[in-house]
Amino acid sequence: MSAVVAPARWPAPDGSERAGFIRALPDSPAGTHVRIWVDRSGQPTDPPDTSRTVVGMAVVVGACTVLGSGLVLLLGIAAMHSRLERVRMAAWDAEWAKVEPGWAHRLP
Image 1 (cartoon, rainbow, N blue to C red):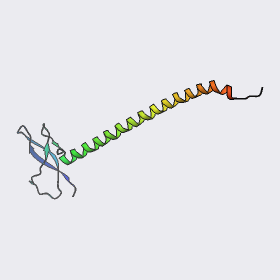
Image 2 (image 1 turned 90 degrees about the horizontal axis):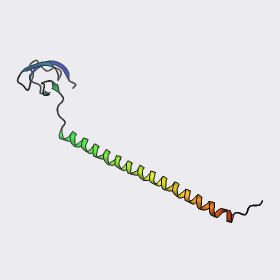
Image 3 (image 1 turned 120 degrees about the vertical axis):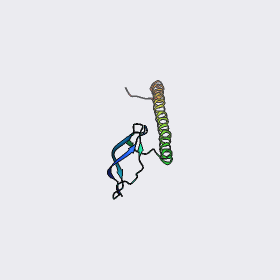
Image 4 (image 1 turned 180 degrees about the horizontal axis):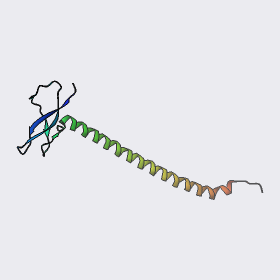
């Protein structure tokens, strides 16, 4: 069943009475008590997260942190590997430039 908006009155944390609209079950008779959560100013708000929701969010954040850290580590390793490969190939080219003229038999 979906909720409907209904006029209501409720006490604020400071003891004053507030009025406004809240969500209630359809076909609720007038005067039915409905539990609501209010903020410090006495305005209706969503209920706090359950411990199950908090644990679920913590697991998701932890998993994202681990995966993100692993991705940063892998990218760092790939960048280092690429840089070392360029250095190695430059050394190979320099060495080949020294050795190759003695091996090559070119016709004039």
